[in-house]
Image 1: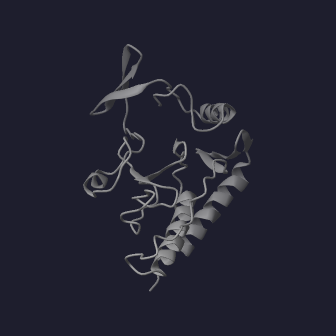
Image 2: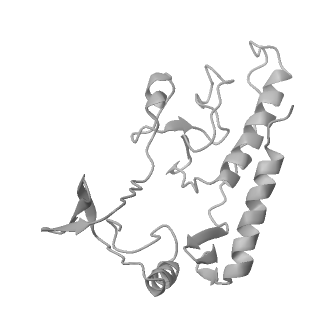
Image 3: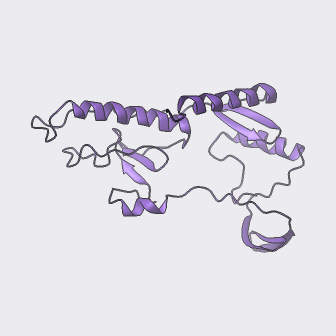
Length: 210
């Protein structure tokens, strides 16, 4: 079920259609432009336009999207109108021309980069967080080379690089897609193996060190 008019609106139209066909072929009952308005014992109520419909169910699982964590509101850091932490391309929270607090950085899913023409798009994926974290680490190291009060001025810092085109993995139950732009590769066995291999690399690389 989705309140949108198609699946995967962030990706190319053809990718959404491919995903829809794959799910329907596996017996999934898709309800687009439909919202969950009530949940009770053994039943949920759906709304599509002006029509409501009760639907019996043994288990309801709701995925309502993402929103800023409540803790961000109390940090005293700049935020976007939607409540995310607002950082500049250098991942600085106070990224003004003459930074008043140049050593305050933020990165990851909680931030939105603002600069140039406005707010940058974000993938909100682990790889993007890793890229941002590398920028933060290098910039902190660069600031550490100077006296804390920066008597010669705050040094220039490295910007985060926007990568608007990057491969996506899409899980479709028993199937899986690898998507790059409008292109899509549907090889379930290979795609699933690759995604599991990639997850194991993340776990191994970032496992706690004793």
